[in-house]
Length: 209
Ligand SMILES: Nc1ncnc2c1ncn2[C@@H]1O[C@H](COP(=O)(O)OP(=O)(O)O)[C@@H](O)[C@H]1O
Ligand SMILES: [Mg+2]
Image (cartoon, rainbow, N blue to C red; front, side, top):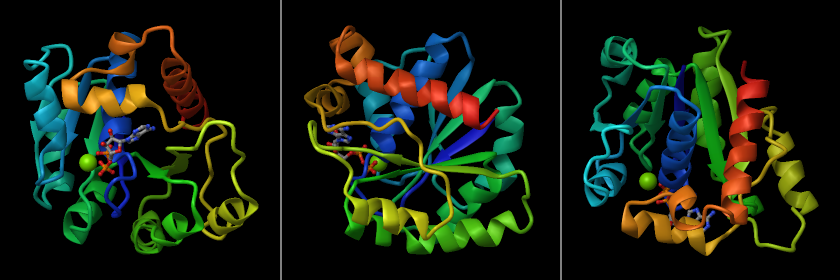
């Protein structure tokens, strides 16, 4: 399956979620490729910091040719996870065309939900031609011991895209992983961050199967 992690807003957790989703899938025995579609190359930086772990290859493909070039690359893998760019509408459109599933990390604030409007329009346009395209919102950076505000749920509901039950909280372990080229399974194996991302993967595999 080709999963694109998209949101044209920066800082919502696309790269963090991409790398953790990809690592978690590879940990479950899947052969996984990460495609860094962001010209900023954060996923490539992460891979360089961990000295290019052969179990989790990260390749850069940050041009609007994903839909043309990815199928051949993807044939050698069980799962491909695309780390989407901010803005860059043409690359995002290309990633949507290439993908079987689109995961949209969003921070639990109504402003962040409204900022997804353009992406949702692109997805709806593509889904006319791709009836099997799967989509889901993933709430990221939830503040621990708070509830998701009703305003956020209402704003998300207007898009008619499913919202995963599992959420990812704001946790130091996730923030640290970026700088050190690691993942939370390595830095805090028994922590809550691992539990959260494992739950997200379980749910995603269930609802998208
Ligand atoms: N759940 C989280 N908890 C703590 N820090 C997070 C979390 N998700 C993302 N971050 C941090 O927020 C910043 C932006 O995340 P990133 O994944 O790079 O977003 P994007 O790729 O959408 O721009 C990074 O410094 C990252 O470490
Ligand atoms: Mg990023």
